Image 1 (cartoon, rainbow, N blue to C red):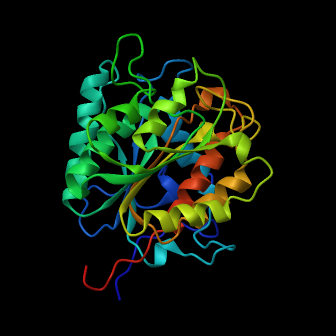
Image 2 (image 1 turned 90 degrees about the horizontal axis):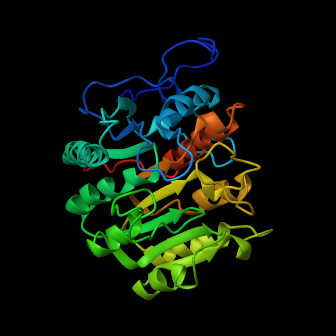
Length: 316
């Protein structure tokens, strides 16, 4: 029987000690034998408002030490069916955004060439565009579940075409997405005019405004999205600012009236069974939450997404 990597138990080594990896998993120096690679992208040079997401991966890892391997609610035990490791941080160029995006894309090409599913801890949302470029080269255009307060479909920001607010327009233009299988969930706040959302809707993007989701269970909506996607490859991009600042204040562009952590759990669990080819969690900015709660939420949401991954087939 294959021995999979396991997080260090809090009964064997105190949670405030041990390796600084996600859930205190082994840190891998090779992709050999891995099913899932967790990595950090410590970058905030693509953000337009509050910086600090360069510290996101480190604090998410720190807060993840509290998480135990077995999911008491769903019965999932991801570390018993998948070989998962933390492969460390990508060595981005903190003084050069285009170069950093190239590094991310090249790194993802290498990970995907080994048939390893990548899980990214951001970092600002600009990291998702190079990821999607690599994902599309591997899998073709993908369905996208994008959970966020913002649609991130600006044409440019201060003349720049590649920022955290332009990601999904570029992905649409480059043919990286199956446009009528793009689901943007949790959108809210203010804008510059009615076309902010009308234009991407014209491409086929489906919008679920936060105000339509208040005081609702999201399980059925998530299940409907899962059925609509079918067996298409799907990428999930989870921006922590989709949550209300009461739950996740440590982010760069907070918007009131957001989702709750309970809704976040319902939504992720409803996606169990999708053909997931990768996911990221972005925009955790620790300087704006000295309690660590935002990173704690992020770590738990990453764990929940690991819980919906299927075991590899015997053929693979």
